[in-house]
Length: 604
Image (cartoon, rainbow, N blue to C red; front, side, top):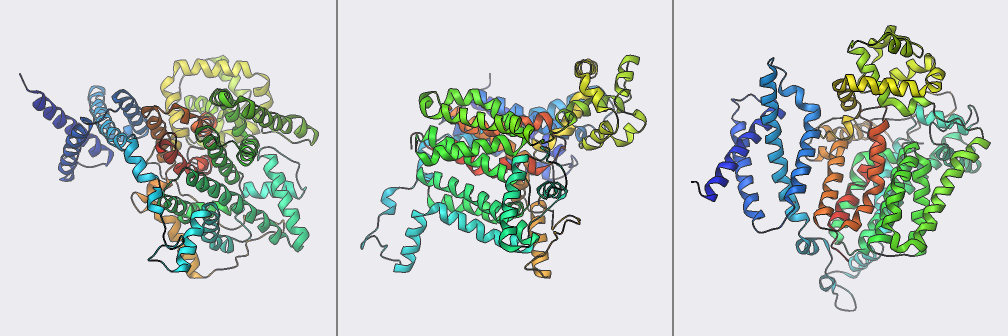
């Protein structure tokens, strides 16, 4: 009979072997590559270290295992075809996939245990995150004895005005992008909104009408002051920069109120000020940027009101305004708020007298604007096909895979679209081609026969679940698969238009152009740093932080993650594009918020 230590040793050897096999397949290595031996040794010693560490701590093994299985499923859902592409036997395919699945589960399970051992250690986190008052002691009338009066004054000012310092740091670092992209980056979406502002086309809520109104307000203000269209557009761009930087400043101020160390605040500010896509997006005229600022503001206000219990007029105002912005600055924001509302009511039940009226106010403001006000101003709503992109893509996948359909099913589909070119137009990760095909056909028939098409979608899904699952993965993988590369923030200047607005850079030259190009491309070249450019990694971080909160038993913090979870679900239900960074830019903006909220010591 083997001893317990010997059984553990054999288990770690087996886990290391399975993990090596999984990493070999994931990295496209050949079995004879010497780096597979390196993988084996690293995995073995890592598992031994985790086992010794776990013997001293109490961590939820069940939740770690469940999270590991979920992460493995998310990873293999996209990557698994590469593992079996050279195998023809279904039995061999099943065995290889099972081995790789076990290897990844072992790796993620031990990695999560290792990370949880630090993130769930409240005493350790308190020492590393929180400022100790005794370390802030000053002598000589509040001045550090080894600092000059000037440096001491700057340090004291920074400590007392962290929000302002973070705001100014972001604005200063983003200023070169503002000057280079002056008056701002305008893509075809931006041009369409600008046409609405000028009254050249009717108002449409395809791009949120309220955001168009805000754009129009600052444009008219700028035009009244300057008389120049380009300068007028730049006024809105500058406002957008201030809004995003202001949200970041509010976040930094929130952390400072929780006594987070200045060094941690400095790193977080650097994440916003120095990562290039924040700067590029801050000067890009899209609704996604103020929307992301609203999500960060809403999350911080929830943290202040629920966790810290800091109920004052300023926090209540931010909570209300950011909630209204979430509902009105993106179409999915309204549905996400409705989804989160019951949980918000439950989470704030102890502060019902203060918070419930504000939630009702947010709901009423958004509903009044979205329905009676928009009808009064004849605002056109997005067409029906926009909201059913994923079911549409799934049905199209069945057709393009040449699955047999009944005569009634074929006739129903042909009432809406011409199937002649559907094979050529179908793109598994891009729904716009099929949307345009429906618009060119008979979308009115689709709207009038929703029940019949719902039954068609359901019947085909029951008959061809593999096609549906594959189509769903292809349509959404960019938001949860961590290894999907997407070139972020590559847009420049003003799209071709005859409206009188053009790109007029205030700074330029080869050095500026090359510097901007290198800054954007570094995300696709530098490891570790490149993970900050991944939407899938942001999703994994969000799920990891939720697991940390659950393991720590601090369930009251879950309410802080509600807006992001609800918004992510809406994206995964109706996204028209599989990899569009701006659709989940709110998650990237909130990354430090997720991490710090999960690790904040209880009651601090």
